[in-house]
Length: 388
Ligand SMILES: Cc1ncc(COP(=O)(O)O)c(C=O)c1O
Image (cartoon, rainbow, N blue to C red):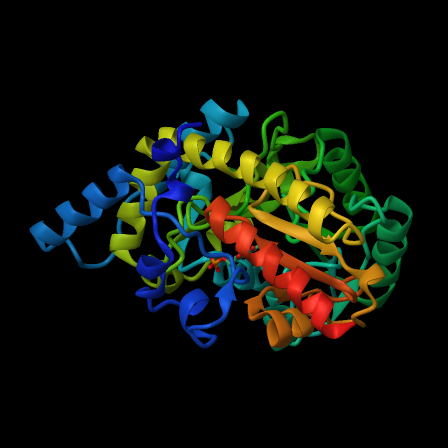
Protein backbone atom coordinates (compact mmCIF):
# COMPACT_ATOMS: atom_id res chain seq x y z
CA UNK A 1 0.00 0.00 0.00
CA UNK A 2 1.40 3.44 -0.87
CA UNK A 3 2.42 5.33 2.22
CA UNK A 4 0.01 8.19 1.58
CA UNK A 5 -2.90 5.74 1.66
CA UNK A 6 -1.97 4.27 5.06
CA UNK A 7 -3.61 6.12 7.97
CA UNK A 8 -0.94 4.58 10.24
CA UNK A 9 1.82 6.44 8.40
CA UNK A 10 0.40 9.95 8.40
CA UNK A 11 1.45 11.46 11.73
CA UNK A 12 4.96 12.40 12.80
CA UNK A 13 6.25 11.71 16.28
CA UNK A 14 6.25 15.46 16.86
CA UNK A 15 2.54 15.69 16.01
CA UNK A 16 1.70 12.67 18.14
CA UNK A 17 3.52 14.12 21.15
CA UNK A 18 1.16 17.10 21.04
CA UNK A 19 -1.69 14.74 21.96
CA UNK A 20 -2.83 14.94 25.56
CA UNK A 21 -4.40 11.48 25.91
CA UNK A 22 -3.25 8.63 28.14
CA UNK A 23 -0.95 7.02 25.58
CA UNK A 24 1.06 10.20 25.12
CA UNK A 25 0.96 11.77 28.59
CA UNK A 26 1.55 8.92 31.02
CA UNK A 27 5.31 8.71 30.46
CA UNK A 28 8.02 11.35 30.06
CA UNK A 29 8.88 12.66 26.57
CA UNK A 30 11.90 10.41 26.10
CA UNK A 31 9.69 7.29 26.33
CA UNK A 32 8.22 5.88 23.13
CA UNK A 33 4.66 4.74 24.03
CA UNK A 34 3.31 1.57 22.39
CA UNK A 35 1.11 0.44 25.24
CA UNK A 36 -2.55 1.46 25.79
CA UNK A 37 -4.91 0.74 22.85
CA UNK A 38 -5.03 4.14 21.18
CA UNK A 39 -4.13 4.43 17.50
CA UNK A 40 -1.61 6.83 15.98
CA UNK A 41 -3.90 7.87 13.13
CA UNK A 42 -5.74 10.96 11.93
CA UNK A 43 -9.49 10.32 12.20
CA UNK A 44 -11.44 9.01 9.22
CA UNK A 45 -12.70 11.87 7.09
CA UNK A 46 -16.44 10.99 7.44
CA UNK A 47 -16.01 11.03 11.23
CA UNK A 48 -14.30 14.43 11.18
CA UNK A 49 -17.06 15.76 8.94
CA UNK A 50 -19.86 14.42 11.15
CA UNK A 51 -18.32 15.87 14.32
CA UNK A 52 -17.68 19.20 12.57
CA UNK A 53 -21.29 19.39 11.40
CA UNK A 54 -22.60 18.59 14.87
CA UNK A 55 -20.42 21.28 16.43
CA UNK A 56 -21.34 23.85 13.75
CA UNK A 57 -25.00 23.15 14.41
CA UNK A 58 -24.65 23.12 18.17
CA UNK A 59 -26.00 19.57 18.04
CA UNK A 60 -24.30 18.79 21.35
CA UNK A 61 -27.19 17.78 23.56
CA UNK A 62 -28.29 14.37 24.82
CA UNK A 63 -28.29 11.22 22.69
CA UNK A 64 -31.50 9.87 21.16
CA UNK A 65 -32.69 7.42 18.55
CA UNK A 66 -31.45 4.26 16.91
CA UNK A 67 -29.03 5.60 14.27
CA UNK A 68 -26.03 3.92 15.95
CA UNK A 69 -27.80 0.54 16.04
CA UNK A 70 -28.87 0.88 12.41
CA UNK A 71 -25.35 1.79 11.33
CA UNK A 72 -23.97 -1.24 13.19
CA UNK A 73 -26.62 -3.45 11.61
CA UNK A 74 -25.51 -2.28 8.13
CA UNK A 75 -21.86 -2.89 8.99
CA UNK A 76 -22.63 -6.32 10.48
CA UNK A 77 -24.57 -7.35 7.39
CA UNK A 78 -21.84 -6.24 5.02
CA UNK A 79 -18.80 -7.48 6.95
CA UNK A 80 -20.06 -10.52 8.84
CA UNK A 81 -23.17 -11.51 6.89
CA UNK A 82 -25.14 -11.11 10.09
CA UNK A 83 -28.59 -9.57 10.40
CA UNK A 84 -28.52 -9.70 14.16
CA UNK A 85 -28.42 -6.33 15.87
CA UNK A 86 -32.09 -5.43 15.45
CA UNK A 87 -32.55 -1.92 16.83
CA UNK A 88 -35.26 -3.03 19.29
CA UNK A 89 -32.77 -5.37 20.94
CA UNK A 90 -30.02 -2.80 21.37
CA UNK A 91 -29.29 -0.02 23.82
CA UNK A 92 -26.69 2.71 23.75
CA UNK A 93 -24.32 2.58 26.70
CA UNK A 94 -21.52 4.94 27.75
CA UNK A 95 -18.64 2.71 26.62
CA UNK A 96 -17.83 -0.97 26.37
CA UNK A 97 -16.63 -1.50 29.92
CA UNK A 98 -19.58 0.32 31.48
CA UNK A 99 -21.82 -1.58 29.09
CA UNK A 100 -20.37 -4.84 30.38
CA UNK A 101 -20.95 -3.70 33.95
CA UNK A 102 -24.61 -3.06 33.10
CA UNK A 103 -24.97 -6.43 31.32
CA UNK A 104 -23.48 -8.20 34.35
CA UNK A 105 -25.97 -6.40 36.61
CA UNK A 106 -28.83 -7.61 34.39
CA UNK A 107 -27.92 -11.30 34.57
CA UNK A 108 -26.14 -11.71 37.91
CA UNK A 109 -26.00 -10.39 41.44
CA UNK A 110 -23.24 -9.46 43.88
CA UNK A 111 -21.17 -12.51 44.71
CA UNK A 112 -21.98 -14.34 41.47
CA UNK A 113 -18.74 -15.46 39.82
CA UNK A 114 -17.60 -14.34 36.37
CA UNK A 115 -15.43 -16.64 34.27
CA UNK A 116 -12.76 -15.07 32.04
CA UNK A 117 -10.11 -16.55 29.75
CA UNK A 118 -6.77 -15.37 31.06
CA UNK A 119 -4.54 -13.78 29.97
CA UNK A 120 -7.13 -11.11 29.29
CA UNK A 121 -7.71 -7.33 29.10
CA UNK A 122 -6.80 -6.17 32.65
CA UNK A 123 -9.93 -4.04 33.31
CA UNK A 124 -11.98 -7.26 33.24
CA UNK A 125 -10.47 -8.01 36.65
CA UNK A 126 -10.90 -4.47 37.96
CA UNK A 127 -14.46 -3.75 36.81
CA UNK A 128 -15.80 -7.20 37.69
CA UNK A 129 -13.99 -7.21 41.04
CA UNK A 130 -15.31 -3.75 41.89
CA UNK A 131 -18.84 -5.04 41.33
CA UNK A 132 -18.34 -7.63 44.05
CA UNK A 133 -18.25 -10.52 41.58
CA UNK A 134 -15.32 -12.92 42.01
CA UNK A 135 -13.34 -13.53 38.83
CA UNK A 136 -12.71 -17.19 37.99
CA UNK A 137 -9.96 -17.77 35.45
CA UNK A 138 -10.18 -20.37 32.70
CA UNK A 139 -6.76 -19.89 31.09
CA UNK A 140 -6.46 -20.15 27.32
CA UNK A 141 -4.44 -23.04 25.91
CA UNK A 142 -0.81 -22.50 24.89
CA UNK A 143 -2.05 -21.92 21.34
CA UNK A 144 -4.07 -18.94 22.59
CA UNK A 145 -7.38 -20.70 21.94
CA UNK A 146 -10.13 -21.59 24.39
CA UNK A 147 -9.25 -24.79 26.24
CA UNK A 148 -12.63 -26.47 26.48
CA UNK A 149 -11.67 -28.91 29.23
CA UNK A 150 -10.53 -25.97 31.35
CA UNK A 151 -13.60 -23.90 30.45
CA UNK A 152 -15.93 -26.77 31.33
CA UNK A 153 -14.30 -27.30 34.69
CA UNK A 154 -14.61 -23.55 35.41
CA UNK A 155 -18.30 -23.65 34.40
CA UNK A 156 -18.86 -26.67 36.62
CA UNK A 157 -17.15 -24.91 39.54
CA UNK A 158 -19.15 -21.66 39.19
CA UNK A 159 -22.42 -23.51 38.64
CA UNK A 160 -21.89 -25.29 41.97
CA UNK A 161 -21.11 -22.00 43.72
CA UNK A 162 -23.89 -19.71 42.52
CA UNK A 163 -27.26 -19.47 40.79
CA UNK A 164 -26.28 -16.83 38.26
CA UNK A 165 -22.75 -17.41 37.03
CA UNK A 166 -21.54 -15.51 33.97
CA UNK A 167 -18.89 -16.05 31.29
CA UNK A 168 -17.30 -12.83 30.06
CA UNK A 169 -16.07 -13.76 26.60
CA UNK A 170 -13.53 -11.54 24.85
CA UNK A 171 -14.05 -11.94 21.12
CA UNK A 172 -11.70 -11.36 19.35
CA UNK A 173 -9.45 -11.92 22.31
CA UNK A 174 -7.29 -9.18 23.80
CA UNK A 175 -4.26 -9.64 24.11
CA UNK A 176 -3.70 -12.72 21.92
CA UNK A 177 -5.80 -11.50 18.97
CA UNK A 178 -7.45 -14.93 18.74
CA UNK A 179 -10.54 -14.98 16.51
CA UNK A 180 -12.90 -17.58 17.90
CA UNK A 181 -14.40 -19.77 15.18
CA UNK A 182 -18.11 -20.50 14.69
CA UNK A 183 -17.46 -24.05 15.94
CA UNK A 184 -15.73 -22.83 19.08
CA UNK A 185 -18.47 -20.30 19.82
CA UNK A 186 -21.13 -22.95 19.27
CA UNK A 187 -19.35 -25.18 21.79
CA UNK A 188 -19.23 -22.25 24.21
CA UNK A 189 -22.98 -21.77 23.85
CA UNK A 190 -23.63 -25.48 24.37
CA UNK A 191 -21.47 -25.63 27.50
CA UNK A 192 -23.01 -22.44 28.86
CA UNK A 193 -26.49 -23.92 28.46
CA UNK A 194 -25.45 -27.19 30.11
CA UNK A 195 -24.13 -25.41 33.21
CA UNK A 196 -26.62 -22.53 33.33
CA UNK A 197 -23.94 -19.91 32.67
CA UNK A 198 -24.97 -16.65 30.99
CA UNK A 199 -22.64 -15.33 28.30
CA UNK A 200 -21.71 -11.66 27.96
CA UNK A 201 -19.45 -11.04 24.95
CA UNK A 202 -17.07 -8.10 24.61
CA UNK A 203 -16.81 -7.71 20.83
CA UNK A 204 -15.09 -4.34 20.68
CA UNK A 205 -12.26 -5.62 18.44
CA UNK A 206 -14.66 -7.25 15.94
CA UNK A 207 -13.96 -4.90 13.00
CA UNK A 208 -10.16 -5.27 13.30
CA UNK A 209 -9.34 -8.58 11.63
CA UNK A 210 -6.26 -9.58 9.65
CA UNK A 211 -6.42 -10.63 5.99
CA UNK A 212 -7.95 -14.09 5.77
CA UNK A 213 -9.63 -14.07 9.20
CA UNK A 214 -13.40 -13.77 9.71
CA UNK A 215 -15.05 -12.54 12.85
CA UNK A 216 -18.14 -14.46 13.98
CA UNK A 217 -20.60 -12.62 16.26
CA UNK A 218 -21.38 -14.69 19.35
CA UNK A 219 -25.10 -13.95 19.06
CA UNK A 220 -25.12 -15.41 15.54
CA UNK A 221 -24.13 -18.98 16.48
CA UNK A 222 -26.63 -21.70 17.44
CA UNK A 223 -27.30 -21.26 21.16
CA UNK A 224 -26.00 -17.68 21.12
CA UNK A 225 -29.58 -16.37 21.16
CA UNK A 226 -29.52 -15.98 24.92
CA UNK A 227 -26.26 -14.03 24.89
CA UNK A 228 -25.59 -10.36 25.40
CA UNK A 229 -22.89 -8.52 23.50
CA UNK A 230 -21.28 -5.11 23.70
CA UNK A 231 -19.83 -3.62 20.51
CA UNK A 232 -18.44 -0.23 19.64
CA UNK A 233 -16.72 1.71 16.88
CA UNK A 234 -14.33 3.08 19.49
CA UNK A 235 -11.40 0.69 18.98
CA UNK A 236 -11.43 0.36 15.19
CA UNK A 237 -11.80 4.09 14.50
CA UNK A 238 -9.89 5.40 17.54
CA UNK A 239 -12.89 7.05 19.17
CA UNK A 240 -12.41 6.04 22.82
CA UNK A 241 -12.59 9.69 23.89
CA UNK A 242 -15.96 10.07 22.14
CA UNK A 243 -17.84 7.87 24.56
CA UNK A 244 -20.43 5.50 23.14
CA UNK A 245 -21.07 1.79 22.66
CA UNK A 246 -23.97 -0.53 21.91
CA UNK A 247 -25.33 -3.35 24.03
CA UNK A 248 -27.05 -6.02 21.96
CA UNK A 249 -29.31 -8.81 23.17
CA UNK A 250 -29.89 -12.07 21.38
CA UNK A 251 -33.60 -12.84 20.81
CA UNK A 252 -33.83 -14.88 24.03
CA UNK A 253 -32.15 -12.14 26.09
CA UNK A 254 -34.40 -9.30 24.91
CA UNK A 255 -36.32 -9.31 28.21
CA UNK A 256 -33.06 -8.93 30.13
CA UNK A 257 -31.97 -5.94 28.08
CA UNK A 258 -35.44 -4.42 28.47
CA UNK A 259 -34.68 -4.15 32.22
CA UNK A 260 -31.71 -1.85 31.55
CA UNK A 261 -32.38 1.32 33.55
CA UNK A 262 -33.33 4.15 31.24
CA UNK A 263 -30.70 6.48 32.71
CA UNK A 264 -27.86 4.28 31.42
CA UNK A 265 -28.68 5.66 27.98
CA UNK A 266 -27.96 9.18 29.22
CA UNK A 267 -24.29 8.30 29.76
CA UNK A 268 -22.99 8.09 26.20
CA UNK A 269 -21.92 11.29 24.52
CA UNK A 270 -24.31 12.47 21.81
CA UNK A 271 -21.35 13.66 19.72
CA UNK A 272 -19.80 10.25 20.38
CA UNK A 273 -22.90 8.52 19.03
CA UNK A 274 -22.76 10.75 15.95
CA UNK A 275 -19.06 9.98 15.41
CA UNK A 276 -19.48 6.22 15.90
CA UNK A 277 -22.47 6.17 13.56
CA UNK A 278 -20.52 7.98 10.82
CA UNK A 279 -17.60 5.58 11.28
CA UNK A 280 -19.78 2.48 10.85
CA UNK A 281 -21.76 3.96 7.99
CA UNK A 282 -19.08 5.64 5.94
CA UNK A 283 -15.73 4.69 7.44
CA UNK A 284 -15.30 1.33 5.68
CA UNK A 285 -12.63 2.46 3.19
CA UNK A 286 -10.61 4.10 5.94
CA UNK A 287 -10.90 0.94 8.04
CA UNK A 288 -9.73 -1.21 5.13
CA UNK A 289 -6.67 1.01 4.72
CA UNK A 290 -5.91 0.62 8.44
CA UNK A 291 -6.36 -3.16 8.20
CA UNK A 292 -3.88 -3.33 5.31
CA UNK A 293 -1.43 -1.20 7.27
CA UNK A 294 -1.81 -3.51 10.26
CA UNK A 295 -1.16 -6.58 8.09
CA UNK A 296 2.08 -4.91 6.99
CA UNK A 297 2.96 -3.93 10.55
CA UNK A 298 2.51 -7.52 11.77
CA UNK A 299 4.88 -8.73 9.04
CA UNK A 300 7.36 -5.97 9.85
CA UNK A 301 7.32 -6.77 13.56
CA UNK A 302 7.95 -10.46 12.86
CA UNK A 303 10.95 -9.55 10.67
CA UNK A 304 12.36 -7.07 13.15
CA UNK A 305 12.05 -9.49 16.06
CA UNK A 306 13.64 -12.32 14.07
CA UNK A 307 16.57 -10.05 13.32
CA UNK A 308 17.07 -8.14 16.59
CA UNK A 309 15.37 -10.20 19.30
CA UNK A 310 15.22 -13.78 17.99
CA UNK A 311 14.47 -15.21 21.44
CA UNK A 312 11.12 -13.37 21.56
CA UNK A 313 8.30 -15.57 20.36
CA UNK A 314 5.62 -13.85 18.32
CA UNK A 315 2.72 -15.36 16.41
CA UNK A 316 1.08 -12.60 14.30
CA UNK A 317 -2.52 -12.30 15.45
CA UNK A 318 -5.70 -12.78 13.44
CA UNK A 319 -7.32 -9.70 14.96
CA UNK A 320 -6.79 -6.55 17.05
CA UNK A 321 -3.85 -4.21 16.60
CA UNK A 322 -2.02 -5.76 19.52
CA UNK A 323 1.02 -8.03 19.49
CA UNK A 324 1.45 -10.45 22.38
CA UNK A 325 5.13 -11.16 22.77
CA UNK A 326 6.49 -14.13 24.70
CA UNK A 327 9.71 -12.80 26.25
CA UNK A 328 10.25 -15.64 28.71
CA UNK A 329 13.47 -16.73 27.04
CA UNK A 330 15.06 -13.30 27.44
CA UNK A 331 15.78 -13.86 31.12
CA UNK A 332 14.15 -10.58 32.12
CA UNK A 333 11.87 -12.10 34.74
CA UNK A 334 8.09 -11.89 35.05
CA UNK A 335 7.82 -8.28 33.93
CA UNK A 336 10.04 -7.62 30.90
CA UNK A 337 8.02 -4.46 30.16
CA UNK A 338 9.57 -2.89 33.27
CA UNK A 339 13.07 -3.55 31.87
CA UNK A 340 12.14 -2.28 28.39
CA UNK A 341 10.78 0.88 29.98
CA UNK A 342 13.61 1.52 32.35
CA UNK A 343 16.53 0.63 30.09
CA UNK A 344 15.06 1.09 26.62
CA UNK A 345 12.64 3.97 27.18
CA UNK A 346 9.84 2.17 25.37
CA UNK A 347 6.46 1.68 27.08
CA UNK A 348 4.69 -1.64 26.47
CA UNK A 349 1.91 -3.24 28.51
CA UNK A 350 3.08 -5.63 31.25
CA UNK A 351 1.88 -9.17 30.74
CA UNK A 352 1.47 -9.64 34.49
CA UNK A 353 -1.55 -7.27 34.42
CA UNK A 354 -3.39 -9.74 32.16
CA UNK A 355 -3.71 -12.44 34.82
CA UNK A 356 -2.57 -16.06 34.75
CA UNK A 357 -0.49 -16.74 31.65
CA UNK A 358 0.79 -13.17 31.38
CA UNK A 359 4.07 -13.43 33.30
CA UNK A 360 7.06 -13.00 31.00
CA UNK A 361 4.94 -11.50 28.21
CA UNK A 362 4.51 -7.94 26.95
CA UNK A 363 1.80 -6.44 24.75
CA UNK A 364 2.90 -4.09 21.98
CA UNK A 365 0.46 -1.77 20.19
CA UNK A 366 0.92 -2.04 16.41
CA UNK A 367 -1.43 0.83 15.51
CA UNK A 368 1.41 3.13 14.67
CA UNK A 369 3.86 3.80 11.85
CA UNK A 370 6.46 1.30 10.61
CA UNK A 371 9.11 3.81 11.74
CA UNK A 372 7.92 3.81 15.34
CA UNK A 373 7.63 0.01 15.39
CA UNK A 374 11.21 -0.18 14.11
CA UNK A 375 12.35 2.28 16.75
CA UNK A 376 10.50 0.35 19.48
CA UNK A 377 12.25 -2.91 18.58
CA UNK A 378 15.60 -1.08 18.43
CA UNK A 379 14.96 0.20 21.96
CA UNK A 380 13.87 -3.23 23.21
CA UNK A 381 17.06 -4.80 21.81
CA UNK A 382 19.16 -2.04 23.40
CA UNK A 383 17.41 -2.65 26.73
CA UNK A 384 18.20 -6.34 26.54
CA UNK A 385 21.87 -5.62 25.84
CA UNK A 386 21.95 -3.17 28.75
CA UNK A 387 20.37 -5.73 31.06
CA UNK A 388 22.76 -8.58 30.23
C1 LIG B 1 -11.38 -6.05 25.08
C2 LIG B 1 -11.62 -4.60 25.39
N1 LIG B 1 -12.77 -4.23 25.97
C3 LIG B 1 -13.03 -2.95 26.27
C4 LIG B 1 -12.11 -1.96 26.00
C5 LIG B 1 -12.41 -0.56 26.41
O1 LIG B 1 -13.49 -0.07 25.70
P1 LIG B 1 -14.23 1.24 26.19
O2 LIG B 1 -13.21 2.34 26.14
O3 LIG B 1 -15.32 1.43 25.18
O4 LIG B 1 -14.73 0.96 27.56
C6 LIG B 1 -10.90 -2.29 25.38
C7 LIG B 1 -9.91 -1.25 25.11
O5 LIG B 1 -8.83 -1.48 24.64
C8 LIG B 1 -10.65 -3.65 25.08
O6 LIG B 1 -9.51 -4.03 24.49
